[in-house]
Length: 144
Image 1 (cartoon, rainbow, N blue to C red):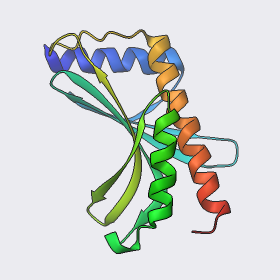
Image 2: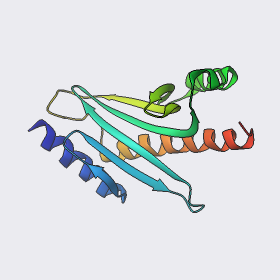
Image 3: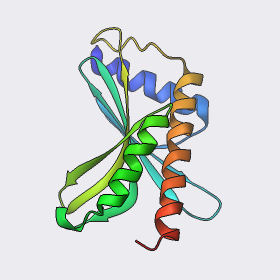
Image 4: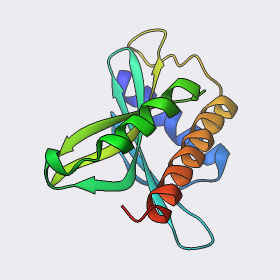
């Protein structure tokens, strides 16, 4: 029941927003967003017990932890202070490290009774996309 509810709820939210999923399983979803310039972001959704975890990786990635600029980490920590939706974090991936924007949505219970509407879901995703696009643009302009 739990996994079916996640699947049905995310499918409904995505359909109501006019998006397309590239992966949708019992506990995970991936949705790609492409702007008019061909720039693509991927939203990852993970249902983890009593929360729904949203994440969008930035283009900033590093092979080794010592390659991560302290000034960029400080910049993102400062952005976290003012963020209405989501928070920036570093994550170790299979091929290195990356800055990723996360948002955790608490759920009413493990049966995926979500406390937000499709409209609120859409607003969270749009806010995260704008934040990552803004950071990625800054990253490219600074020639890191």
